Image (cartoon, rainbow, N blue to C red; front, side, top):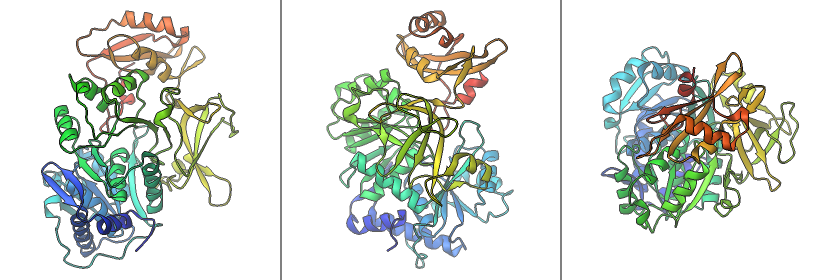
Length: 501
């Protein structure tokens, strides 16, 4: 059996945990043995269509059993899966299918026409496969197992520019980081993970990969449209691990009476994707007092960078912790000098989880990856500003391109946002810069109110003036019913910048 691959993990779990439930989605359930068989069938089907090693297959599926089968089936065929959000419009799908050179796509039956139309301009594309056409039993032997150095996935990230970039990962990159996260979360076959995060993005995707790695059960739900259903699933499925982003936590803590329920099986909560304010973190911990909470930070380009051990939350509530097991991080200035504790600079990441580069983008790759300690060693320039304390704990300051330069001073949005979150009645807060002829950039705050509260922009500016230096006080406070989000639940800062002019 090939070692160090995601496919090998599924093979091993099918042997060790064949009768254990692997995936739950709605009324559908597959054991690890059944999942392995379905993956064999899908891989053989791809091979019969001429799909093989190194080819790219787009997976345009909502959270569900079929998505798990397609992801692992693509890898077992020796190809690389490209997870794409099924809500993407035709023009974006067309660009991505063409850019990655996809030869096939698997999608929901109701999306076949959209995908087929999008693929019409992609010269390498050959097959649209509807999920209801997925075979349940192999009609031929599956191809040879992939190697750890084979291409596993291209995962698209928009970043701050809005231009999608295809992040390239080998099996060994993804296998390594999954194992590192499993180690610090102490995941095991006894865990039952509820994932409402889309498998088309890394935070959701890796819960599938980690569950398969350890033989845990993954319960998939397509979002948080019905919060009451999440509560039902937590209880009925005896969930032990609940990952979330700030949007998920805000929805849950707003549900009346949730803190009165015990959820005796729930042991781990995690947050990534975007920072959770200190005030919101405290609310989450009060709502789920028996579960430990992991604050984490990562990027698509390496999946995970650091985590804060739960026993450090009280002492370091604003920290995102230390490097994940088996990796190294440090902070540099613009000249590449390593900075001492307390100084702000760019976070640099080293480890086997770092991407191979951006697909068909050598210039973008060269900007983010730089030579490491010896020939062939490369490290990732994160593009994010951090500081580190004397004990080595990391604190996110801002994305370097989010820093607001106003009156000749540098303003970190997170610092202003924390002050706004401490104001009574504020549900969401985000701070961006708007071009200004006099100031260079003006500090603009965008906020939404908690249920039952009304906000006064002038009162919020006074609150900021009581807690911030003059140049950090928002010039304007814009009220929203809800702040705009991207399709993976992150705050849409580009939309806020556009609304700030």
